[in-house]
Length: 122
Image (cartoon, rainbow, N blue to C red; front, side, top):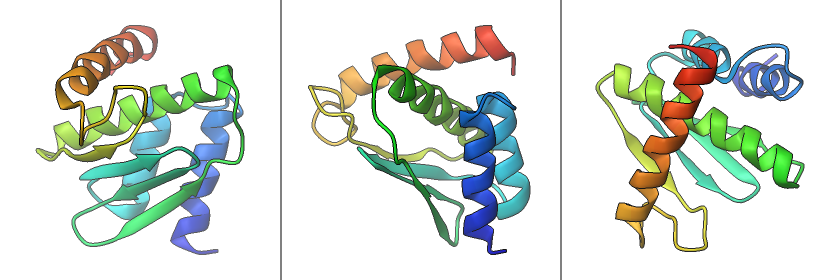
């Protein structure tokens, strides 16, 4: 089993509701080392540490699934910030991306992070 398989498995555990987004992010960090950020495009999420990148396949769509992905990305941001890093590239589209709409993205990201911390704890 490769590290990519383990990372995908932790995401699948989260997606199935077996663990919280923060538990998934921390479990991934235990496997890959300190999370430094991620790159997100629809259907693609790549988590990075300071040396390597690990891709997660996002095979589903739909509002509920995308809400869960937003929670997971918020957990990754929380964990990366705890490591003193936040290399985030996020292309949510519709006026919310780190590249073209950074202000809007970070306002939205703070709201989601606060909701995740309130719902699941830190």
